Length: 273
Image 1 (cartoon, rainbow, N blue to C red):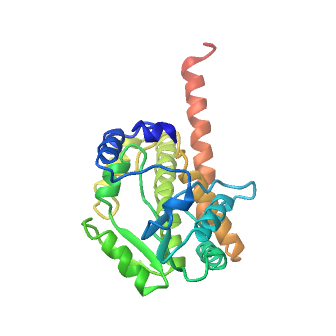
Image 2: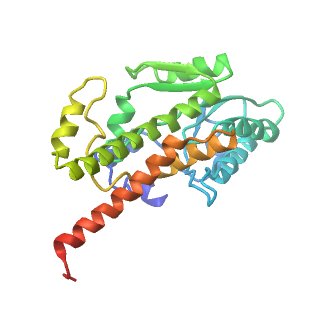
């Protein structure tokens, strides 16, 4: 936290450090670990914490729920609390219940799900110029507050309920993972029949209905979002008695792509150590 207070970003994100320093200087940005002064001063509070995958494949909500309890205990007046974290269907109602149970008498709170769609390396651009803004809430008042908050951003609005907002995030990331696995499956088939995989995928991507983003062969998808979101969506489906075999195959193809990269590297390098 002391690093942030000095205007230094502990990780690299293009343009972030300059933006932090500029807004710290203008007193538009404050960093603190103390909920007590921060929450009562806020009209809107966003929960943006990690939701790692558990051993069972679902999302670990412990940090989200812990933060919600601390926010609830410090609410005063009317506040909109919104989740940015990726959480499964039904999780937002758990958070809403915690806020209602922990808030002081006289405090009013409405709850919403406003999922983020940021990419590492272009987070600032994705925030300022998003493809869409998704707002899921049961409260008309909260919806109006959040629409007003985002009015300076020129992007389509998707106004819906909790469950739909939650699923949009998982479905979007899983579809992109699917495109990556599809590209690797086509590359594998191309190799077997002596076709040029890059040309095949280039030709596919020229179709405007498909596009060429996330349609390149390689070692498969990774990072902090796609693997956990694919597994979480499979887990959500299982919890609702639906076998999401398509996404299960996406995971299998992704593992095969990784093994293929290692196999090819060994074939090229031989006994080199």
